[in-house]
Length: 280
Ligand code: SF4
Image (cartoon, rainbow, N blue to C red; front, side, top):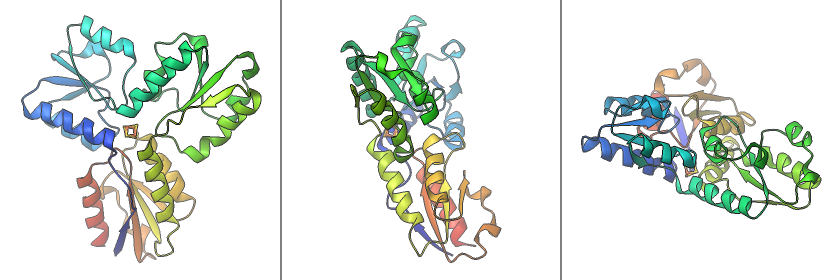
């Protein structure tokens, strides 16, 4: 079976840096816990646990001297809380996530009402909103939700996108807010890694040579799911976490299989899947 990889796929710069920082820390014998998954990939989480860096879901659970903050970032108050608990912080928050923290704070100080387009439960979005007054912001996930708010009431509005969104899909949400209040501006906060992986996935799925597309990534990874949604529009598409999820019946009519992967998928998992597909 022939395989063809998307031109851009897999680990983004933010996740690559986070992964390296935690591995270096573990290699030096560091004793720490990660708040939430270091990246949204179960394989990486298992590996980290083998390296001795376990995953916890609250600061209160930490028994180790060091707490690792993941690439998605945390609310600023978590830094103070961790220090108050006597924890040392290994911060692997992505630079682009910090840019949104900074820009949204600036917009708020300038009198704007903040709108985060994304999933209110995604850790990145929780990081932006947790410490804010409830009336300072909205998190909007659909056009219906956007139409239900009285946007005219705000003297100024600043829109931010969760970095890992499918930009195309959320454009109408931003437009609905802009139409309701002309004093709305947007911050360009979909990170380039997400955009590039999405564009490359679309190109792969529309490639005439490609019969089936396999998207490789974690079950809980939002950006992996978006790649899957994009590719499914054009070709039969399957989402797998690794080679063991592949089903030979998917490829019965296929001559060429396209491969792409979410921003939290390690290179070795992509290699494993490609090898297994090629061997079919
Ligand atoms: S997807 Fe973008 S914002 Fe998110 S960690 Fe990667 S580089 Fe950073």
